Amino acid sequence: MWAHRTGEFSMYKRMSPRDYTVVADVEDSSVVSHSIPDQETTNPSWRLSFPHVLAATISAFLFGYHLGVVNEPLESISFDLGFNGNTLAEGLVVSTCLGGALIGSLFSGWIADGIGRRRAFQLCALPMIVGASISATTTTLAGMLLGRLLVGTGMGLGPPVASLYVTEVSPPFVRGTYGSFIQIATCLGLMGALLFGIPVREIAGWWRICFWVSTVPAGILALSMMFCAESPHWLYKQGRTAEAEAEFERLLGGAHVKFAMQELSKLDRGDESDVVHFSELFYGRCFRGICIFILGYAPTDFVSMYILHFGIYSCYCHHQFVFSSLSSLLFSLGFVIHMFLLQLFLLGQPYLLYNSYLA
Image 1 (cartoon, rainbow, N blue to C red):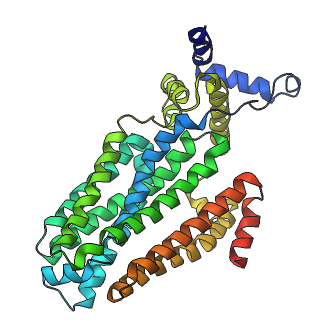
Image 2 (cartoon, rainbow, N blue to C red; image 1 turned 120 degrees about the horizontal axis):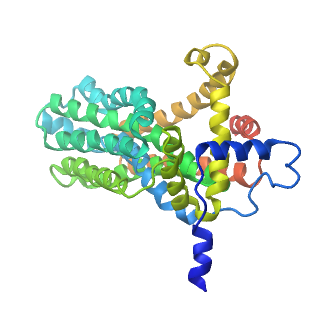
């Protein structure tokens, strides 16, 4: 009896993209809209997509870890590599990864659309493993900078793909909550780097272990993506409808596949009829939204960079871990509260954006 009911939920009739378009057109008509519901009566289980989201957030954890991995060991690194007292070299060791992140982020969208989300994650893990290994074994400043640059390219590639992937594989009713995991993972990575760097003053060469440790989550990210679902949105845009249905079944359950495919068909038809050019980022209808986003995100980024710089400054302070970890924790809690209000009270993004500045 249980097997029979399970089969009812997991089996459905596969349809072609044209069939989904026809069904979507019928549902949009005013004649049938009274007899066919516009949305599902029940939500899919969040447990099905949770492991896939958790695996994707490893890239954000690595981003935070590599931001803070040199804060505590910087003095030991400069002494062992022979540039102790050279503030320019110390600044380059800290900031070179951000230059690499700029390069990685510029190509993240093209890579994710070209080879898929899962392979993009695996590709971002590769320079993180290679770069961290170079930094851990180097005996020169040039080797350290090369390793940090390679790590930075993975840092720039991973989080944008993670944001896209989490949005595409999450059920709508928990999409905002899952989206907050990326910021939480970043803060946890930063705190983990500061925590793991505490023994650097007592153990010679401990800073090399700090770099070696980062290869473990990077390897887990690359391996876990072999078992995670590919984005159904990407598969659908590639014309691989049957595979998109199979991935939706893994992420949402068989009973929700038909509705998800219909919504995906509507979204795809909207993309075709409403073409947006890249130049519209700088003028036209998209320019206002881009400006609001930049003006809203810039202070947040400034605060996060302040936390990073404060961590560097506090290398000479005995309470560095306490101050830096507390700042990261408060930053993370603020983001979680923001997403919690958005999910439960549905205040809307403009209202929350306004009140974030009042705080």
